[in-house]
Length: 363
Ligand code: PHE
Image (cartoon, rainbow, N blue to C red; front, top):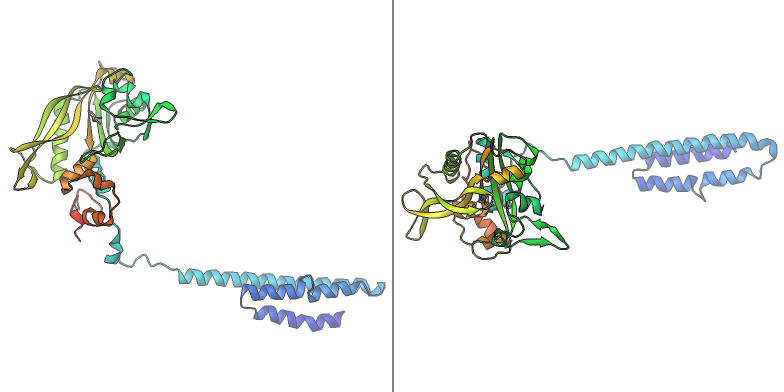
């Protein structure tokens, strides 16, 4: 037995040593230790030995088998490590390399861009960010906002109801976040809530899904002058001009009293549209003082607290600022459109570096 082992050992160990791939190594393992392997054959030979030799031969063979298995294991570990190192070396990414201009192939959608611009300004004005769900319950979308079941205002908003659950709707506006915020936090409250709204509408200026930013400020002395100041200062930064005129026109929303529609001063001349004071007006957003019933519904005492709220259509702000004529084109997923109106991904809007310096896909 010793002699057979002495013959086989260098052969196998050399084979293991020379195997330079995992599959070559596995072939050697099968040749040595597999069902018809050479060591397995020696094990079978044991049975034919006379009883006095069996024990010693068995021990020798076991040691041999363990040695060979050990050699295969350590070679396997070495090959695996080498394979991993090669992979790591070939897949190295140098993060310090400058971005090549042609990696700007993708574009940021104007809605995302304008959302960022608007939230950046509100954040600088000290507003916190709040959010609510797209699938809203009747209480937050209607009831708590002073819109009871039989109220005519429910027809003002062509609602999408969820199948089989009359209590759930695709929210018709972001105003439900007002309620969610007041239910969870005591004043002073100063939040903006960006998000989607849904209504059964479709024309040049309406799509069934649209984007809003809701604003809510509640404290003990919050008033209309505060609302107007916030909006005027916002418009100056957003439209990047000091020549802003804002007009409050009486309107109606069940959740604000008094309610207004804010119009922005603008001029249409020779087919050109410009934001400026003293010429025409353009309807811009809904706003007002939070209705006492709404404060009460959200658990606040209207004799102690008062607040203002506003709701801006983000898509509309994008159309105005970047001169995009048809809202429906926003959601057509047309590559030519996004290339023309989109923004470069590496230019993130900030107050200091500029909000809109790459407007209109300029490179
Ligand atoms: N929720 C109203 C709309 O979608 C806008 C609004 C918000 C009006 C807050 C007043 C106060 O039309």
